Image (cartoon, rainbow, N blue to C red; front, side):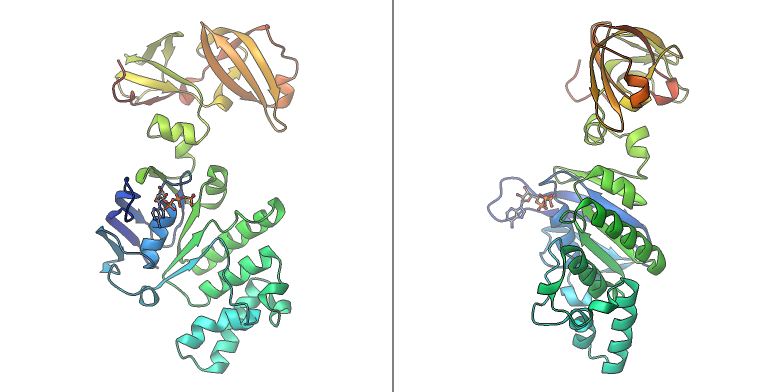
Length: 349
Ligand SMILES: Nc1ncnc2c1ncn2[C@@H]1O[C@H](COP(=O)(O)OP(=O)(O)OP(=O)(O)O)[C@@H](O)[C@H]1O
């Protein structure tokens, strides 16, 4: 198993005003499945192409364990990349596509045939071995592309938005397959996605890129419980932010003095609470609130609340939200364990 390290990786495309990556430092643990997450244009594909050797960095290094691969050609890096569009060779069969890289390496035909057959069985494509890419569905083509990369036993596997072109059912299936194969093979894997729910469902670790910078690299739950900044919290659906000051275990803000859990920093900060952590009803940090709007969202109900002239948004189970109506007076409570302090944005008073 191999650790992947990016050190000070920088890239500005010719003619672009802004750099696509500003000195990215990231260590992808050996054998982990890490999601490289970020909105469109944040530098995810650029990072993948740099690791795969399809483009060259302006500065920085790329290491597999202690070896730099920065100056190696793509085929000698030990890195395989699967693109969003599977890019299969149209004139080759499924088996021909999967065996292509092994043939390029000069392996004996019987060894190639055995490896290809085993790989196709693993991705449940044995029955389609003789088909051409034009005769495959999108999900099948994506599985062939994954098999073609894995059969080479790369040290690092890069998957660029592997689920984005699939419908919801196929996406679940493919996500399960990627997870299972990654666990079985232990190949250090980096998956690009712009979808935070997908990153959470798939990865052991998430590296969040915003504007070409790594803003947090953590376990999925940390992005909800301990976001590093307001921007991170917002990317993960955070909507409640209260400026104020923490002092002696309490937070003074527009809603009064709220009890905090122990261990949070003192001083000016931005308090945040997840909408799903707000309780309707009496409890710790109780506050009188007026319901502004109730929106049924299927699995949850969104309740917009006015609290001391401040807007808070809660997400509750539908059965908890249904009897509510706009104008109603309710008590909300804010459990201290769900209150988290963020640094105040630059320039804030
Ligand atoms: N070949 C290129 N020439 C000039 N600018 C580029 C080129 N490729 C990407 N960029 C710019 O670099 C920045 C990062 O792009 P990149 O494709 O890495 O982002 P991304 O996070 O993968 O986005 P998406 O999710 O939309 O694919 C963007 O501002 C993009 O416009």
